[in-house]
Image 1 (cartoon, rainbow, N blue to C red):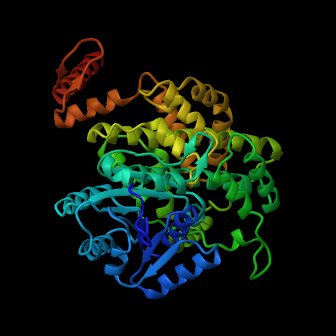
Image 2: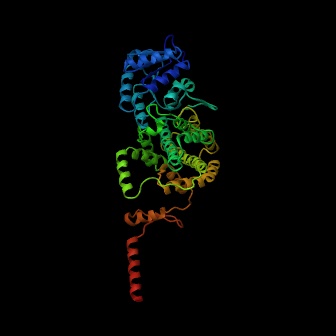
Image 3: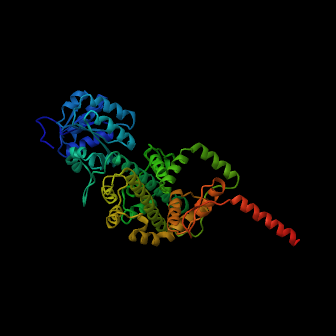
Length: 498
């Protein structure tokens, strides 16, 4: 990029909710002068005050979109961090009145990838460039180093490459940012990242449920178990914060805060989009789908209370007790089951990204995506480095499950995995994510499935035809006529015998 004009900002950011403020401060802290704008002037003042308090950072606030745009060096780069949907369109319309051909808009929200492609085409007519950039890491990541997933034209990425490489989280093999691909690739990858995150969180919650409801672990014991897990193969941001959660006492009453939280899980839509895309592309993603179903069911709190009462009266009540339970062995089995199920969740997400990449011609690098998720983002985990290595060994790897290293680990852990799922079923604790992952594993590793019967049924009622294993071609059978003849012949034989 050209040297900044005296007094001009290197980049601009519009949308100063917490994520926007923190990302703006991060950019300024890395030495890039930044202009900020928000429709609500108090948010501008708040951000400017924070910049002064946090080190007199090179950040300037503006109340007018025109003055905001004009304060940025040409060719201008403006990041938008507002709520997905109509607010993005409105912000683009407001800013584009003052932008000039050659300027670039970067949407950093959780946006549907087709909206990004639509907007890129629309602003191109005005001579503007456009990037859809996934930002992961939450408030802390935005301030101190997120994982960034920009997608669009390479030219647009070049506008901000120097900025994002310094702003992103830094790991041993570089910054957690890469040019993802054309069009809406960045938003799509961030969407799937969030779908994997749904699965990860669900699996962790099931591990918690089994340990607490079946094993009887206290919050102190849960804290110890998750802390220990975070020092081994399960080392990750989500396991780390889970350990922290179990240590927090309720500041408004007795006991621990986690026990006072209503068991209804919110969502913002990216998990649903992931499952919808998996269905559209015929990619099995049962772990992610199970996590979404679990959130739906959690929202039925009143119905579940009534169902609990009705079934208790009918004889299905509390969780069955387990006699002579070895708590230490249970913790170890749950750890192994969680790890194996997590591999399935990540495998499903990666398969979805690859399928979309093939459909759209994005040529996405799965190993590089695993690398930029190693730091900054919500699903950052120790074993992402090994996922990267798996795709580096074989870029055309059909599934993480059949990478030699991961396959060996799945085999070593399947015994514990089966014990935990079986135990949960026996005592009445639902483990939809772990169960779905195990079913996925067992289905994928079988050379022969009962799908032959399903195809026969489809041909029976709908003449959909079928293929044979012993000869090429498509076939149709008059199942009803043949079966009717068989039944009649059997009846005649029976009548003669009498």
